[in-house]
Image (cartoon, rainbow, N blue to C red; front, side, top):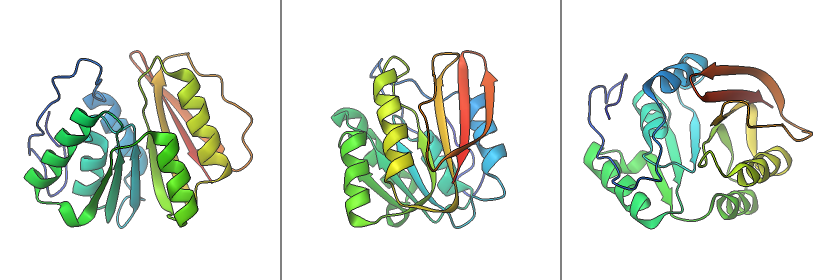
Length: 183
């Protein structure tokens, strides 16, 4: 897997041998950054359920000032750490090898705010996804105009009632739906 654009363009990421890690397709990554292109410069990016970290690495490459990766699976988190060092972007990245809901609680307690949140848990974990969306909506500190992007299996998500987030768009690519929210 390679980074598509920015100062890290064409740099390769070491891939996980864990079959439960489902990298975001190049087509969906392209959609994400077409949506983000005017807002990414200087942004603080949160990559929840990061897996390979391809979305967060692409964000850094395209001008995000920082990326916080959250990945609970220890071997996958170790590979993320390897890629951070391989790319030489340690100062711009932080990695939390904990559950996404624990991380959201920690960020809320610390008052850590983000301008982008990318949420991509395993497609079969719909309840986890709904819990994450609710936590982001109700308590995570977000910068004004923040963008929240949710990747899920096509037609598998019924959105819960939201108090702070507004749906901007929903895009479909193959078997993937990409929801875009703002504050």
